[in-house]
Image (tube, rainbow, N blue to C red):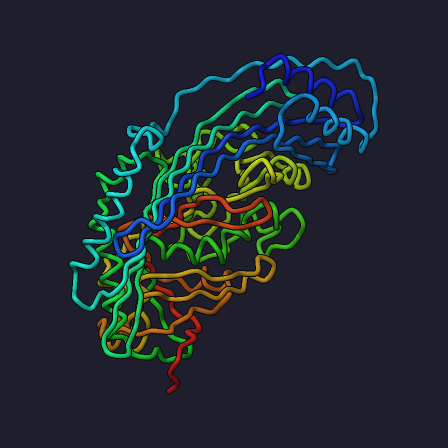
Length: 462
């Protein structure tokens, strides 16, 4: 990382221009991926990422440039190009930085960089053996272990110098089942902002067995009927619906440019009164947590919706300028190669007061979406489409047979109004979220919820 004196000199150079703000972001990341097929290690990849990103503001204008070289002969031409874009102006500015120290919210007990490859591969073998041991119909298992350590340092013309070290790990298992000509799959992929101690809490055996369980259930699944019907969406990764269909539309990236269905709706009711939701980047060792956001501001817990009322957006500094609002410490990016913008961290619907069994009461025909997959959304319109990886029909208030090929199709602003029951048991799931500033780790979550009506796309027709 660049030293304090060097950063002060660079920032002073930038501010002797028409710019009114300058920021330098540095990154050093080690990303390790180990994959195995049927218990045999296939690939080991270590990617070292190092670089610097610099941006300048002039009012609502922003210019950004980056380099994977941090030596002065590479950095100065980059700074000169940025300064020239706004115009040089010798204002006699001399930036002095003050380093901000704080207590790490996300300590790591077992550093993956200090653990032998054989021990990490053993985690994959344990998951593999557990999946195969579930049932003789499991015929193939793919497993992957991801470990990341990212060190960042952020300095800006306000005199702030602050750093962070982000560590995360994730174990992915995909199991394949076969019965005659019927070939199905199931997966599980938990992760956390922890070191390898995570696999003492969530064991590889549990992960392998869960992937196998879903693959076996899908062997028995019938084609899902289509049409509008009530849907019960289970806890944890079921929250991907809120994340995609509503969360992105609450990011200032969309709101500030009037490209969100929720622009101008602060203080208004946008959801059923049983819906409250937060985005919380402070949860200790959560997959989407950080000590600081990627502008160097301390992460926060942001109440987005309270009893159906829109309370806050997720805002970064530049879009905050456009909106006339302060940053909510929601600025994130994949790496130094991306200019940051407003993004989610750990986003979830808060617990309600309904027992799980109550969610099914009164449903003559509906869908129980136990495991959700990926999908797509248009933040401007709120329209979404999500795959259901494990689903069951609900008949006369009871969960009956498993179904395959289901998809949930609808509109984010509508689904918020159609939630009429929220369960008590909150859980979160892990994913990677893509947007303008790249792919970042985010948690999604919720208790089980009931939606009175969603269009279910299926493979069978009544």
